Picture 1 (cartoon, rainbow, N blue to C red):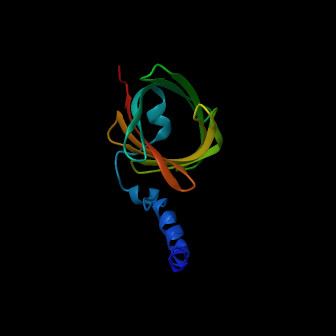
Picture 2 (cartoon, helix red, strand yellow):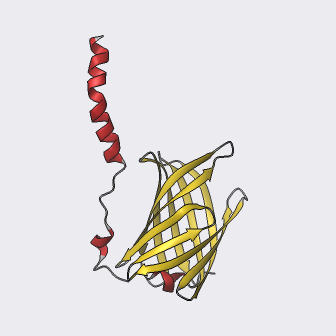
Picture 3 (cartoon, helix red, strand yellow):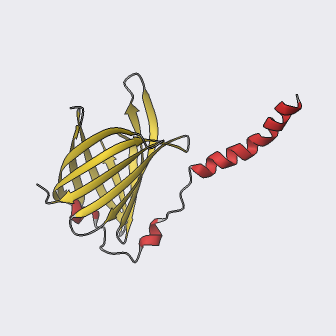
Length: 182
């Protein structure tokens, strides 16, 4: 019985530990002085190619994919059409619509996300958070995405996204975007 009581007393510490695991210390303001400037509307207008991988929480490669993207800006709205091709032959399409809320904030809507994405850019960085229902084949799982993108040069962006459920990381996505890629 004493052994069980010791475990019960440790539950609050376990909850605090698990909560801290889901926290990030990176803030968009930390990138204010970095170059080149991210500039979402400018970079994604036109044709962009992307290559990516999805890893589970243990770092095991689960999927590989490419994305052909076409962006158009009209009346201050970036419409970004993304055509995914996975290594196993599956195809998917996502269409984003981004509108500026202020000088460095955006609202994003897409056909397969829940609600709206909230995004900010500062210096060479862009951070976007949103929810999505992932189709697992046998059920749907609502997860949270936390995307961090960094503009490396005029043609290149690196994207690291964490996928979380109940504040715990369940997977990671890494993407490389290249403008004017053939």
